[in-house]
Amino acid sequence: MKFRVLGCYGGNVPQHGMTSFLVNGRVCLDAGWVSGALSLREQVKVKDVVISHSHLDHTCSLPFLIDNNFSAPGFELRIYAIPEVIASMKDHLFNNHTWPDFTSLPNDLTPVLKLVEVPLEKPFAVNGITLRAIKVSHLVPTTGFVVEDKSGAIAYSSDTGPTERFWKIVNKVENLKALIVETSFPNELQDLANVSGHLTPQTLGRELRKFRQDVPIYLYGAKPRHMAKIRKQVRALKRRRLSFLVQGKTYTF
Ligand SMILES: [Zn+2]
Image (cartoon, rainbow, N blue to C red; front, side, top):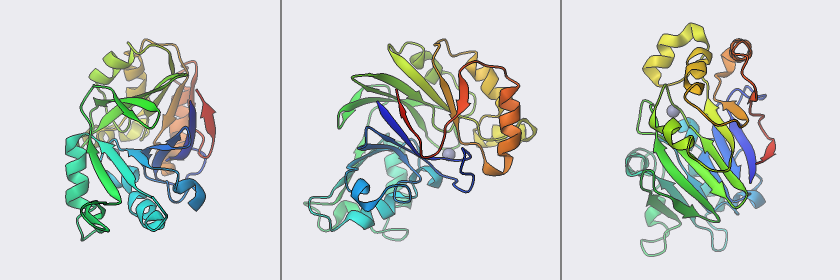
């Protein structure tokens, strides 16, 4: 599986506060930084976007991805998410106030945007990959995903504080190649992490005790302002095979 990091928050490009990944050159996993990271020629190939939750740092390039490619011949975009997330995007993003409702443009019969509800924990297929959505513990309804293709699987937590179900399911995934998990705040901001549904290095350490697979672990989501401190505190965990995703890099899993 080719896994390109379009945006990963802190990473090595601290000015970007967005989260987005491109799987096998075609399917986006979250969409905080798609139109900014990809050329027009690359954007038009993205027909499918899987969204973990409605927060802007995971969705804010969707309006521009559609707008940039609206008149390209045959362009259409399908957005996949659990029903609560789809409802939120209908109400708050594609609501004709924040942005046009592209689910009825250019007309109701052949809209350029389709919003597709996906079930929890049941596999669904998207353009050559299979995904499962698993509820995690964030401020708004949020799912992580197990993402699989012929070469193996990866697990992506999305934004979450301490959680249970995600680890139970991920521990049973066969041929798991990597885990991508968030760590947003330094230990000093534990209270803020608790109320906002995020991890710090110390709660990450506790969460990883629930994880039973021996695969590389990649972190995303560090708030740019706290990057240096978070890196130091993550190093102090002394956990093998644990590193930060690198923005712009393509990983092969
Ligand atoms: Zn969030």
